[in-house]
Figure 1 (tube, rainbow, N blue to C red):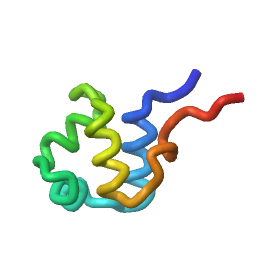
Figure 2: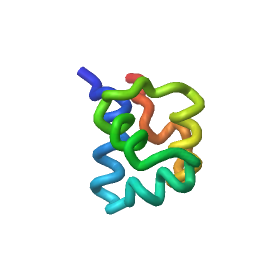
Figure 3: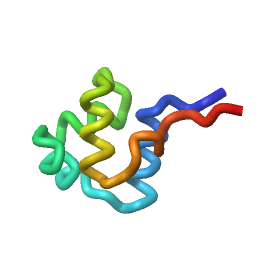
Figure 4: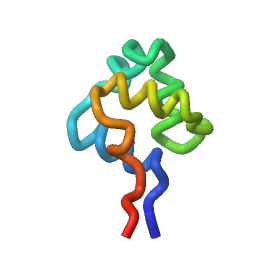
Length: 68
């Protein structure tokens, strides 16, 4: 079973030692909002997802499940 997108995003943030504070600044939101997103406690909208990808300079396809 595929992991939820927010979990893959969180693992990427941790593995690459990215700062939630810097991501929040780049997204124009609070660090608390990033924490909620990365812990699955806030609904991840398409707009938030695209903003997150832009904030960390990765392709929007980075965290999406691959097809077999």
